[in-house]
Amino acid sequence: MKFKQIVALDDVNISEDAVRQISMISESEFIRFNSDSTTSAESVKRIGDADCVLVSWRSPIDREVLTKCPNLRFICLCGTNSDSIDLDEAKKQDIVVSNIMDYGDEGVGEWVFSQLLILARGLGKYQWKSSHAELANKTMGIIGLGAIGKLVADIALGFHMNVLYNSKTRKPEYEAKGLKYVGKKELLTNSDFITLQTPKNLKILTKEDFSFMNGKVLVNNTLGKPFEIEDIKEWIKGENNFVIMDTCVSQDYHKELSNTKRVIFSDFIAGRTEESVVRLGDKTIKNLKAFLTNKPINQVN
Image (cartoon, rainbow, N blue to C red; front, side, top):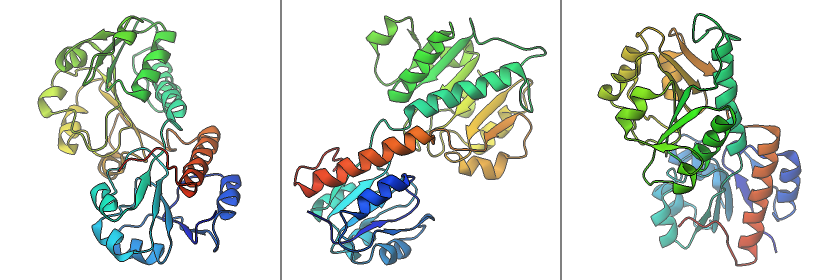
């Protein structure tokens, strides 16, 4: 079985091998767009008569798009966060939406610690302390102990760090490994490094929270805006405060803070590695083929 027409609405970050395989299950040419769609009208134009669309988290698919694309049967989100898709409307129109989990976590975890090592050892533009420092015996504070948060915790334990965490739910299996569950204020006050691993656009840090973070290193690779720009601008003025951000997921901040002292943006996407691109492509193909056999997997609506 094949789809009549598959369209990649934006750059979905899959390998050329995956592109070839996807082309084989599309009766018409597999159409690919490499820029984000920023308006509903543009999305409608790109999707056209397609019955299957691949999309990243960056290009929204709202009610208008779904209504004006009557042939659409399947949306394969080439990512995890589905906030950009109107899932309720898709369900009303019998359009299946599937996402992809656990494809870039390893790269993100390694990125966090590569950035911390560069800062601690003074291998980049800045150095955390007056002399080279070790991560061992320092305290890592993790807000959000989901898949990536757990991976960060495991790596931190490998560096012989003390690990505090704050999350919606307690994780007894990780507390057995040595993690300590604490309130947010205690975490912000007692951690050397603080990393945010939370859902998209969930505000995590308030102006008051920043007042507890003197001499800290904040790592942010969450989607959206977990804190206000004005609050981070004021906080970063403090002596020995640093923030490290993934340029891709913190684009709003990059516009305002790229030339600010002690604000560090990586020049590549944290989770995009050769391996993650292969995993994403493989899981995309599995979602597509499962739908074609009337047994959709990873459905989110």
